[in-house]
Image (cartoon, rainbow, N blue to C red; front, side, top):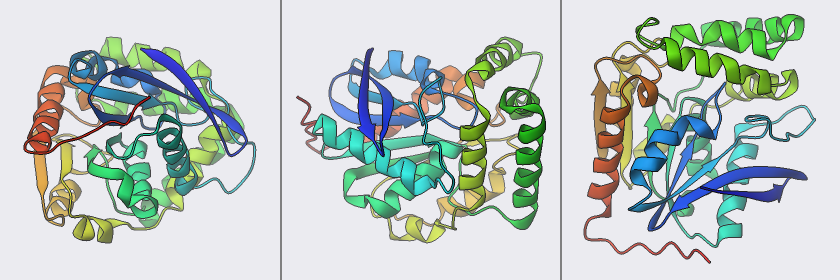
Length: 275
């Protein structure tokens, strides 16, 4: 995997590339970094060009030291990566917060997308209860720090804590890379995002919905409701997962994503325009 960098909004943005073929970008979620996609990248790189960015402030990367950072800002960063790599269109798959950024990308740069995927994610805005939870989270971070906060959130993302103890430990160890400011930026950006479900009704290209049967962050009912909106939906439910299907059911997640990519690739000619 090749480590690369582009400067956007005055900060160096880190991303990784592997493989060749139709470009696919995998965008991590809150409290994660690009390494969350390690298994998928290894499995898909023989057939697809995989791009895995680190959202600013994740993976020990730089971030904009300012207030008012939005999900649209992160979408612009993805766009900048595509411009640098001379990639005309991508399939963009986002996990959790990465899915929220995917929807921002669909709003700001729709011509750059040939398909999208919401992996344990949603196009809905936060409701009042969720916003209140995020406000409490920000207060916790300000008092105890981002690593302590992220550690408290990790176990609830999994269906079976004992079965997933190694993955929980790995994620917990990675929390030391997070600083308070960017994590607060994430929560503020998510809290202030608009409802973008209308985009799903307008989006004429394929949309993948990957849902966890036991997901408490993105209830399965929300995913099923949204899956009825696009013209072409691919809906899959991981029956032994909560919010972390790419770790809880690695092989099933790979098979679902590969099937989606292969199916949407049929009878089409994609050029990655990669130099």
